[in-house]
Every structure is written in structure tokens, then in C-alpha cells.
Length: 192
Image (cartoon, rainbow, N blue to C red; front, top):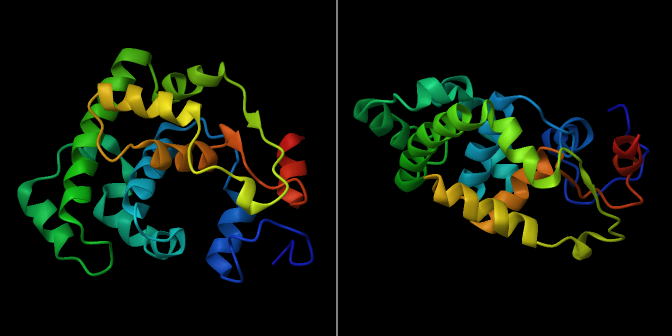
């Protein structure tokens, strides 16, 4: 791995997929609606589980949810949702599967109203990343007033499984918030 001797956040542990996700994706500002929808889906499935579990099932989720294309996901049939619920390659939670289809429709409506989901989500920080300066992993909150605000807005627009903690996770993932600890090499790289 390219940065194997670098100091980093401790949450990836020694898992190769987690390390790659931390080093290449987490906290990088996203401006692609498909990537935003992917993070919304994956973080909803993470609720009550570990990110490692979700990350290791990511490619299976990608297949079931049609490349995370909200246009296709919004049109999933009852048969397809039932098949997803019986697919051992993903997390087989009926409520989360149905919420994903519902969220795809809400996502499309937001795109219609704002041009892109990206324009909607970045308006909360006026297009700027929030650069936190946490010294330890324990300093990082599970939610913030920003995630409370975004969660409330998403719920008002018809989304499910978008509580403040889930929202904070995808704000971190999509780079609206830089929550790499200050000693992590990625904190410095993302500031640049």
C-alpha cells in the first residue's frame, strides 16, 4: 500500500479495503450525484452495523442497486426488492431495501428542484468543506448541528434512514466535513 508508513486515523485498522477507502475516498469532496446516492445508500445500510461490513459488501450492493443509479433504483419492482431481501451478498434488511427505493425517488425530486443533488447538499456549507481539527478519534462527534439540519431537510423531502448520525457519516464520506484527525496524512492532503 502506497502510504503504509504514514500516520493515519485508526478506524481502518489493518483491513486492506478499509485502508484503501480511508486513503483514497473518505473525506474527498464529492461533486458527482451518483457518488452521493451511493454514500446515502451505503450509510443507511451501515446503521447499526460496522462500516467494514458494508464496505466488504459494496460491490454486491452496486449490482443489486444497479450501479447506484437513482433512476433505475426508483423503478425497482416488487420482485427485485424481494430478490434483494433474499440475497446473502448484501445486508438483507427489508426496511432498508424499501427505504433505498423510496430515497431514490426523493433523490430524483431533489435533483429536479435543485438541478443536482450536489447543488442541494453543498448549499448547507456555501460550497466549502468544514475543516475540523480533531486530535483523537474520540473527539469526532457522531452528529453535529449541520447534520441535524441536513437530516431535517432530507426527511422533509421524503427521505428515510437519514437520521443525523447517518447524515453525518455521508457528509464525512463526501468531503463536506474533513474529519481526519490532524496527525493523519490525509488531513494535510485534503487541506491542500
